[in-house]
Amino acid sequence: MTKEEFLERGRELGNIGKYKSAIKFYSKALALDSKFSEAYNLRGVAYSNIKDYEQAIYNFSRAIEFDSTNAELYDNRGIIFSDLKEYARAIADFTKAIELKPTKADFYINRALAYSALEDYGRAMKDFSASIKIYPYSTTYYYRGDLYMSVGNFAAAVEEFNAAIKINNIFFEAYKLRGICLYCLQKYELAIADFNKILEFNINDAWSYFYRGLSYYRLENFCEAIKNFNKAVDLQPEFAEAYKYRGAAYELLGEEVFSKIDCRKVDELKGCW
Figure: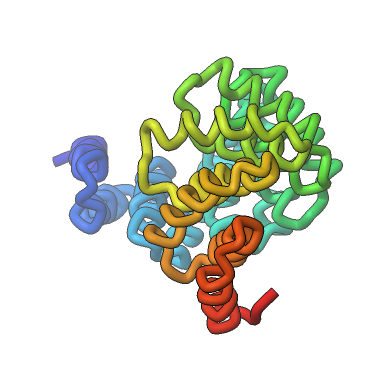
């Protein structure tokens, strides 16, 4: 077999999740040509998929050595550095990828996520915005909304989640974060509508029950609040905040016995309020 045939066989195996077998074929290709950049790259991808990050970095670095103008190689290595929380090194690689190919939206997204992890929100926002100008992925609006949430700008976050949902109307994580923002903005009916949407498709989302319960609690519909807190603790038995607010709702309904039971449960979990 030629090096290209070994490479293609490895690619086929990698595409069906047989990464260790794929690595053997990439290694055979490299035995025929020790400067075969794409074989190093694909072997790096395979190693990253089995979470052998040291080998992944080695292979991406070797690929770069023999194909130093290939932006994708820097991006691949940067993703590994991000996974390892080595954000400064990740940013350096994403920056190089952007220099080589400034029209690739994903490179800006990856660098923005690294900046965000370092709480450098200004640079992160700039990169998310640059990415959107190139291609408006729903996930980029979602990330930008999450960033606005991080700094407490819930109204701006809602606008970003609106944009994400407009592109992808089954983007349930966007509905969830929008619902939380709407709750924080005291728009409780709208928040409930978002949590209803999520729970239509995922009846096992404890956090959606919790926030829907909180919204009903703020609307002084304590019976509905308790129903939702019940579901939250059924799904997540150590959900202290759900016990806390359920106990508060029971107290407001005059159910002192049940309120005290929940208070004791919260005390067991993290200290009674």
